[in-house]
Image 1 (cartoon, rainbow, N blue to C red):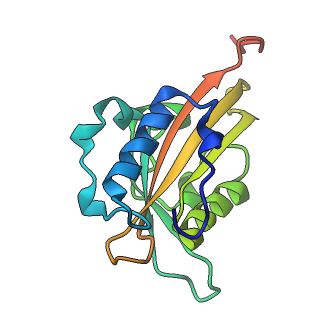
Image 2 (tube, rainbow, N blue to C red; image 1 turned 90 degrees about the horizontal axis):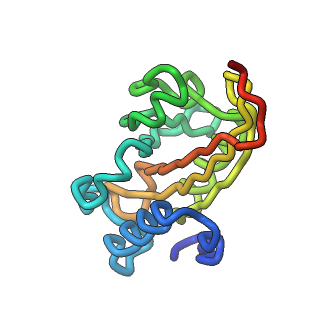
Amino acid sequence: MSGLEFNLSALDHSSIRIRRIFDYWNDIRAGRPMPAWSDFDPAAIPHHLPGIILIDVEAPRPDGTFPYRYRVVGQWEVDARGHNPTGSTVDEGFYGPALESALSDYDTVRSTAGPLYAPLDFIDSRGLHVDEYSILLPFTDKGTRVDKILVYSERRVRPDCDLPY
């Protein structure tokens, strides 16, 4: 891998879909640090599309932080949020337990040009205890700089939690 050596054992307890999207990314990477966005073919992973988020990495702000913008948001992600954040910055359309943690994950993928597996658990806006499993995969249009981050997530409501209805 590049920058950050990705520990494949992190995926040992992940779902088959997370493993398959990683394998697809690794195949189209073809030995390079990361694949070009033009290498990505959504038709190759049709069952993953509802769980995908595509993030654009924009030019840094004057303070050196990078804005991240939702370019594409799959239907499972829209349903989880209750709205479609496409076109919004992550600061504006974020879903999860902590914005700072999400931005830190994006910063890690951007700065290392490597994948990141990010399992987490949190209480969602409906009061449900959610286990979420995400893989963040870098892409480039420029050869060495991360321009896009593909996120695939799956979430499960814990069966032992009390439903709010």
